[in-house]
Amino acid sequence: MTAAAPGDCAVKPGRIKQCVAAAARMLRTTAVRLSALYLALFVGSVVLILVVVYRTTAGFLTEEIGETVALEVGAFQDHYTKYGLPGLVDLVRGRSAVVNNNAIYLLTTPTGAVLAGNLSRWPDVALSDTGWIHFKVADTSGVSNRPSTAQAMTFTLPGHFRLLVGRDMSELDQLSDRMVRSLGWIIAATAMLGLGGGLLVSRGAMRRIEAINRTTRQIMAGDLSDRVPRFGGGDEIDRLAGNLNAMLDRLERLMTGMRQVTDSVAHDLRTPLTRLRSRIELALIHDTDDAEVYRGVLQDSIGEADRLIATFTALLSIAEAESGAKRSDFTAIDLVDVVQLAADLYEPVAEERGQRLAMEIAEGVAPQTVVVRGNGQLLAQAVSNLLDNAIKYTPEGGTITLRLDGAAAGQAARVTVADNGPGVPAEERPKVLQRFVRLDAARASPGNGLGLSLVDAVASLHGARLELSDNQPGLRVALVFPADAKS
Image: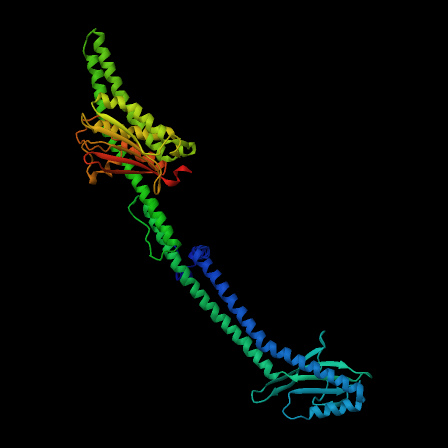
């Protein structure tokens, strides 16, 4: 079912539900929520500024008028106390006669008769709790033909005479009306600008997020080569894209490695399984009672089975190291004991092949001085694999060197195995760390091509790095532990 276009809603009543659903989905999007938040903050800040401006202009003028009127009322009360009603009448008449004065005065009898002032009658409005009244003096006033208004304070004198003192508020009310109308227009314009700005900003962010979604959909469809685009701003979305791309690179390498492992397992195991089946089949075909023949066939079969088991054991060890499951078993491991044990184990093997295994420990390195956190069994297996690989490719009369160096700049320890065999070309060194990769294309030499792969997996598990270099002649392999490997 396709989404309803905006124009379809007006001409196709049957699609109203689709339009409502599309609108509901749009309201739930992050873009709309970000726009609403941006609009609320923007309008709120502008309203706050305008309210402050209003209070510092019209509000200040109103307060100033109120203070002036209150002082004048106090003066009238004092004058009435000193000179009585006649004196107050003369004072009100005198001030009411001043030309171009916006002051308003009115003195009446208890019955409402006007004694003095510039108003014709007492205003017919209710008195507020504060003693102030706001009333209309005339329907029109001045060239603008706007209603004339006033604000005044009233009080009752002894004898129930009433006095009103106020100011013409027409200009101030007009100013307030204009400010209120301007405030409305400004808020409306601010809302439009805020909404537009919010949609523009959120649209850019959502466009980048949609690019991530589009990439993930393509990857879920099976295209592992696609990557999340980066816009070069270096912000959190770019960092997210970088992390996702690194994760995708890792996944692609794992998938490629899995396919390579599958192909290599099928290739490497087919030959020994074929030989195993052939030996058993030949033993069954030959009709003989010689027990030695069957014994030989069984011994050869056991040898082939041991090689198969060794291959699967190495694969399981690599998988276990790469999964990080052994990290919870990390303890303090003394590398002096690890390399010493490996040297003692492989020294007879080297001598049997006419080689010499030299054990070197750097000056100042003693037991319990080179300690890292790790899995002792995996570390011992990694060093053993390096020695086994060196012995395998070193010619008779050659020398294998196992060396342990202590802490140095940026490292906690370094275990190095060097031989003077044929070595590995520089362009081939990254390949030999892959599973089932052997430089012996004919695969005539023993082994399954998993030794260095296991060492690399163990190094990654312990946060170490594997360095392959030229020993001139031969190969030098170093297992370098970082400085924080002690913690």
